Length: 372
Image (cartoon, rainbow, N blue to C red; front, side, top):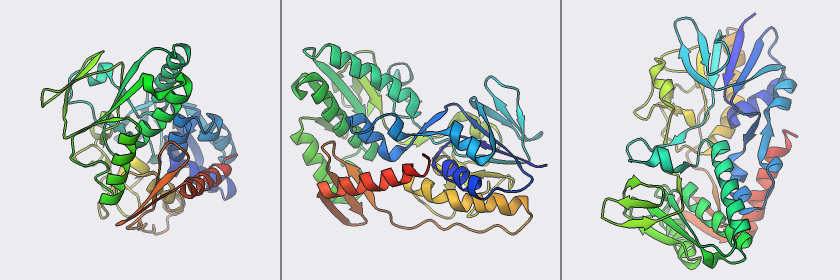
């Protein structure tokens, strides 16, 4: 009986597991390795930060999902691969053997080159660790509403901007006024959300400034200390909390395992979502880089990879030709502004409206409803 082992409960794996429960692959032993039982859905996390959703509404219960799919759930952290013996090396448990392997473990913000960032900055990913730190921050704000707080967010992509806006809303509510909380957004580029069109970038910059968020564009952070951030220009920013939301990178153990990776350590995959170096290994979501398609690390692609990923697991196990997956060129991004409004970004087009937030809310709730 072949062993299909999944590492990580990301969006692609969650969808594939749901579909597996409906249409199982006969004669396969299935194991899911995850370091958490509750996996977050990225689409609703900004709303959770703002206080619009509960923890339960924004997380998928992997224990129930694994049971539905007929998979054994191993709560542990994968820390390496032994590709000579086809085994996953775990942090606490004995290594787990596989015939076929699939990885969907997301990514982490790049902090390695910045002095003090690993010690003093709070990375936005992995999400569970971020949520623990954010919960402690909320407690401080709630219990000391008169105390001034200085918060710095490093990274001016969609993640950093949404975090700033939604955190501003929540802390203003917890402290009774947003005046006691100063949020700094630090970005090395000359425009926010460089991957989006100019209208979206300029509109969000205007909203941030209207909310009192201090923007520091074209500033490169060189050092993070417990109470301040230093930039290459000589700028020093006083801070109580530093959140790190920069470009993503992969865990070190992926490259060390011998899998072919890109320059940032992400697994290189073919159109079939198979590793270019090890055809019995698949990867999807943020941890994968498709060699034939240059696409951003966005949840919309991970969600759409779930079904073709399962199809190719089925095909490789039953010795059928695998099918290529072609990701869409454009995708609709709905960026929440922390006040139950949202901005739509589609190619060169942009639009802001509360209706877009309710559209996003509908889409996200519909996605999560399949795991209830």
